[in-house]
Every structure is written in C-alpha cells, then in structure tokens.
Amino acid sequence: MLTKWINHRHVRIQDATQRKQAEQPLSKEGGFQLIFRDRYLLLIALLVVILNIVNSSGEFLLSKLVVGEAARTFPDAIRMAADRQRYIGEFYGSYFAWFNVAGLILQMFFVSRIFKAVGPGGSFFVGPCIALVGYSVILVAPLLPLVRVLKILDNSSDYSIQSTAGQALFLPTSREAKYKAKAAIDAFFKRFGDVLQAGIVYLGSSLGFALSAFAALNLGFTIIWIVIAAALSREYRRRSHRTSLELATVS
Image (cartoon, rainbow, N blue to C red; front, side, top):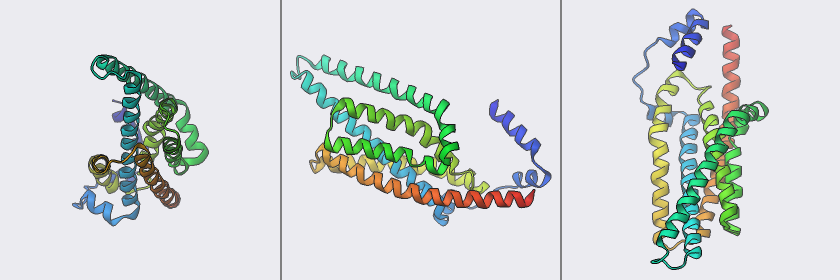
C-alpha cells in the first residue's frame, strides 16, 4: 500500500515528458549485458561479491571461536555435550538479538544523518573500516568477547548503513539498470559471493589454515573492498552531478 501510494504521488508530480519516458517498454538487452558493458555497474557487482565473502567468512571465524570457547569451558565432550550446545545456543541468541537491535537503531536514527554528513559515497567506507578493525583484532588477539562486539557492529552496519548505501548506488543509473542490472546483481552476484566464500573455507580447511590465516585472508578482501568503494564513491559523485545538471537543464 505504501509503495502504491508513493508511486502514485511521484507520477502525479511528474511532467508529461517524464511520464511518457516511464511508460516506455524496456529494451531486450539483459541485465548481465548491462553489467559487463558499464564499469559502474560492474563495480557494484564486484562490491556485492566481496562484501558477501567478507561477511560470511566473518561468521565462519566467529563460529570457530564460539565452538572453541565451548570446548574449553566444557572439556568433557561426552558428558558435557548438552552444556556445550546450551552455551552455543545462548551465545548466538544474545548475539543475533544485539546486532538486530543495533541495526534497527542505526537505521532509524543514524543512517540519514550519516548520509547528510558524508553523503552515500562516504557511507560506503563505514562497513569496510569496521571490518578492517575487526579482522585485525582477530589476527592479533582472537578474544571472543571482543570479536563478538566487533561482529555486532559489523553486521548491524551491514544491514543498515551498507544496505542503504547499496540501494543509493542505483539512484544515478538508467531505468534499464534499475530494473534489470539490479535484479541480476541481487539474484546472482550476491549468491555468487556466498558460493565463493564456501569454496574459500573448504580450501582453507583442507589445507589446514589456522584462524589467523583466515583472518589475514579476510583482511586482504577487506582492502579490496575499500579500493572498490573508493572507485564507486568517485563514480557515484560524478554521475550524481551529471544527473543533477540534466534535471536542471530539463526544468
């Protein structure tokens, strides 16, 4: 109902030219063609892949720490199996509750203010900076209470600031890109990142990687994330400026 109302209001304030453009049928060009032809869309796709690799790998590292802590707290694997399960269940119950509450608070009270202060382009760097600190800590001092706090910040910012900034990336794109390229990125590249992460974990586990090796690998991916975010931020500002000039010319 809200979407229908917003669409009706937006259509009502458009002029005849804009309404005519919005009613034009889309071309036959596919979403993947648009992505591989446009550097900006390709950067968005790469960002989604890297983000999912880093976030999913972070969850894997956290789970390793939780299971290890449960084993140390309850050393008898047979007699204390139920205690271990209860410890892990209570940890994750608290962990998910905290990062969902933190994400809700960030979305309601901070995201709009961050966007006003640094713009969507600057918002791209919040997530990777938190991830950079978090995986550096895991690499140097993998202490579960500290990692827990950092992962709560990581996930809550991912579901609020990073998610909103990701949607804002499509604002200065064409109508074709919004309908087709975005669908391809959300449907394929996001899941492709999960598949790559599963492959990385499988390969690392097969080679006997320690926790620190996985953390170092994630640090490398986080640096790539920052490089892509910087390129996207520059391109977003350039396209937004060009879109503003076009709108000013039309009006």
